[in-house]
Image (cartoon, one colour):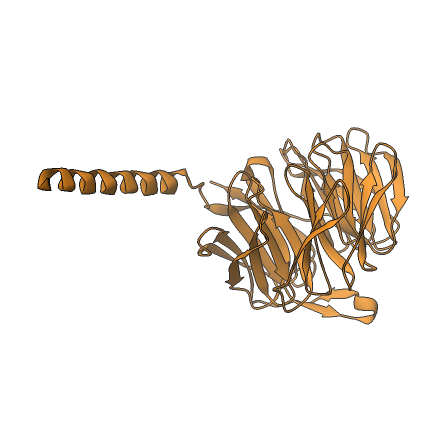
Length: 341
């Protein structure tokens, strides 16, 4: 009986060790090193997005430009006057054929990613804050202030649903990976999860003590993360809406929030903003802001990288090979590209 008991303990310990070892070994490398410092354009960098195949990077600037970069050479291949005002949001469709760009004049432009010509446009209720395509590219979710968000039918170029439920401007929006849900965050300090088919509110998630600036689903749809002007990142169970983690490590508001592709590793970036008239942001230079890699499950910091306090946005290429971080002031307008080794 003693031998049997000892064997069970040994087997359990070995199984646990193997499980932990496998989990640890399966974690991707977080050894990101500076690859490029991209210059050659005017205006603050306000938004960034990689194409699904990772071959193209687009940035939006404060001087109404969309800049297209060739990732293989890190050269500008197109400089587009595609918007009427500051380009505050960018999103590629899942098939990579369209690039949606949103600006401070309430407009969203749909660009053909082969010719870079405008093929459609729509006018939203207010300034465009955030854009997100669903899993098949048929719908575009638009955070556009005025206490509501929009679900736009891309093919018909018409409104599908209004998402009405916030008591303050909607700042952030994201589709779940399977397209069944949309999550929004706003100036009322709350996160709301919606049914994307009916437009009905599923859950409201209180927890932030400031404006919800950014929101993102994990690649498997298990988690929902939100970042606020309260300098905090909240991680929620996307199904139950239960708060799982409250991540405190930034000393300024969260201006960037992304999941490393195919993982549960969350990356958050902070910046310092002075809000002028009509909540128009001005980015403040200086040291002290950072980019933090988090283990979503444990809430532990895995890696920290110092950044300029003008950090405005961040984007991963497919597979997470590159991490692009946009800056607005301080050392100058530029994009820092990190490559995973």
